[in-house]
Length: 261
Image 1: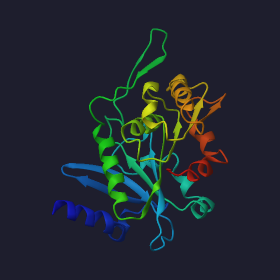
Image 2 (image 1 turned 120 degrees about the horizontal axis):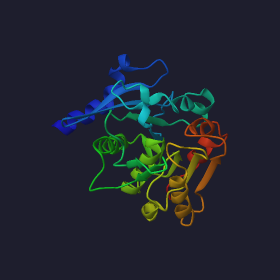
Image 3 (image 1 turned 60 degrees about the vertical axis):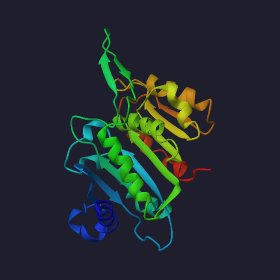
């Protein structure tokens, strides 16, 4: 009965939660699973045609957008999908979950070296963090009503979310058709798990928050297994490489043309 009730709320809540709609068109919602709650914002195509399936885009925000306001996660990237030209050309269901404070999308560890450079480790441990687990469960639920084209489920993220994107791919490699990673990185030893997923990496050459080597290592290992994978380095950019990435003319075109085989 609890599962039936949950599915009912998930399917019909868009009709009942107008008070949760943001000024920009995203709708604020909560995904509740047992005792856990995940806050998220979702954007639907302006006109969802009966019987048609749409791409699903999952966007993972960075550490600075964590919280419980269910709004801050829209700081970077959300306007890209609100652009009227993009909404018309690439109608999709767009999902922006929010990670709470004090936890991350991954089990990532970091410390500064003796010369003041950040050094990272990317342990998978036995399972995902709770927010990551809830996001994956939410994506599964969104696939259930039959409105999503399962061959066109995409994932993208920046910084903590870029790391999260690669972590998600290693845990749920068969779910996503393509990915975009902005100023992220991970363990290159895991790329075989998601070798079939094309990835476009973006990074600032002067990034002193997530050193570019962590993305480059994954890219080099993945490129050997997937020729569609590519890397764009911004020579003068620091950590804020998402602005030039979002300005790439083919940013959305590249990912939306890809489908699972």
